[in-house]
Amino acid sequence: MKTTVNTFKKAKENGEKLTMLTAYDYSTAKLMEEAGVESILVGDSLGMVCLGYEDTLSVTMEDMIHHTKAVARGAKETLVIADMPFMSYQTSVYDAVVNAGRLVKEGHANAVKLEGGIEVCEQIRAIVNASIPVCAHLGLTPQSINAFGGFSVQGKQEAAAKKLLEEAKAIQEAGAFAVVLECIPEKLATFITENIQIPTIGIGAGAGCDGQVLVYQDMLGLYSDFVPKFVKQFRTLGEEMKGGFRDYIKEVKEGTFPAKEHTFKIDESVIEKLY
Ligand code: KIV
Image (cartoon, rainbow, N blue to C red):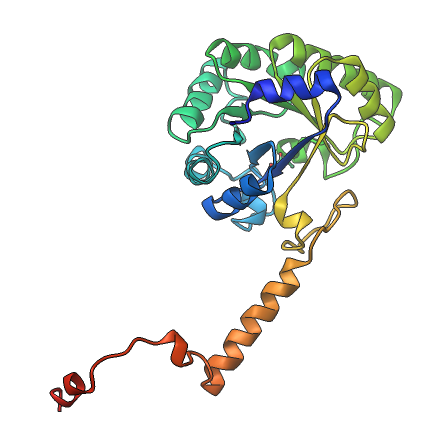
């Protein structure tokens, strides 16, 4: 049965943990669905882990639609959430609704995610009114990297912690069905989780959240440019892949690949007629 926003609601009610992973292509999304993840986020982390940008700011609507389409084809039974890229919703409520609509209509996403708190509540309300579920994102919001002056833990001081709690309540009130809490202290994330009704999905926010999300290249050891403290590498596939690439190069060079079993036969008489 397809996972939906109702899966999220029920999980919170029943105290069951939710899992989310990022994906950007058909094959990976299919593997994740087969493994049983409840939701797939087509994150704008795409810009860094797939496209090689230094941050997420250059990602476009076209990039997001292109990759969301591929993920949706690979994970038909899983809630697919598409990130709204930088400047696709901050500019106006109208832009927010139009662009969220494109991610659903052209990208086949089931929901969208956007970053920010009180300043984007109007956008959240309008998108939800257009029947598109919205996941919010608080704490270290990568699209604000220039305003933050770098990637660092958020909400450590009293005022900032209070603000995050207020923002979580505000985005819930605006109609968000879930909220990603990124890079905030564990105790603060737990307190927020216990004081709102919608599920919190943590990344660098400790085990007290209702669920967890990780960028898949991080958790499989496929992206080495920057490995944040909160990442656990469940596999080291980067090394595995490099090993495979090296073996391939070696076998081609020495002439052991392709072997007989990788080739196609032809009747000798056909070849003779070529002379
Ligand atoms: O873009 C992304 O992958 C994200 C997750 C890190 C939550 O926003």
